[in-house]
Image 1 (cartoon, rainbow, N blue to C red):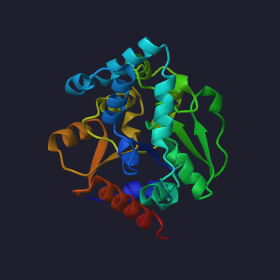
Image 2 (image 1 turned 135 degrees about the vertical axis):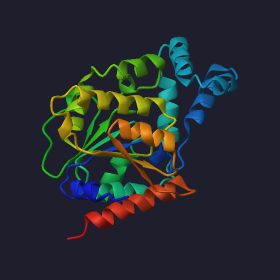
Image 3 (image 1 turned 90 degrees about the vertical axis):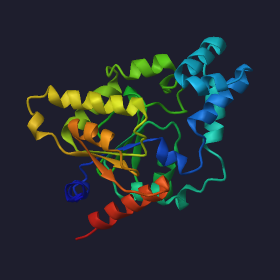
Length: 270
């Protein structure tokens, strides 16, 4: 499969990158299942009930109703997601993300390792969590949009059922920015699982935005990295204007790193 169009857009600093949980998992951070287990411990009941049902959002909603706040859980997450043992400068994946010089990065991850990677490489960035952070970007600066919130602001964190429903309404200031960015530039999704319904709904909403546009035939091509083939999802993605790039590898982390390395090599050619 040729990705020459993607490489050319990266060279021109046109691509918007979307970073999912798979990128953070390569640092050894806890999975959502481990988060659910912690909620069960704090509320003193067996979280296996929720593991079986897969109803994670209801559990965090229940936690907030019981405690009145996500404060204690957020504090545990902040500490657990940022262990002192991580040397972000040695993360091949994060280093390549910085070196590829995307103008805008959207992430649904709560952690701040993307920001730390930019600091480690002394590259300019601006974190965007809410409307107060929106401003005209400076030349050469990368915008890091924390689409599901940031540990610096409890109210910004999208973790409960209600907050997910609110985020998926696509009516907040960050959603307006997303609409603008996604209608003007090619998109690249990495670190996302095709079983993630929230990601699939996001792609569906973005596709509908373009379908409603009188310039829908001018839509830039967008891409999603897959480390395993899935013919069913590939056809659905293609129907929604997203080109799957399959980089087969038994280790998703190695596959992602090899893919980013290939993009960097090709986009660095004169």
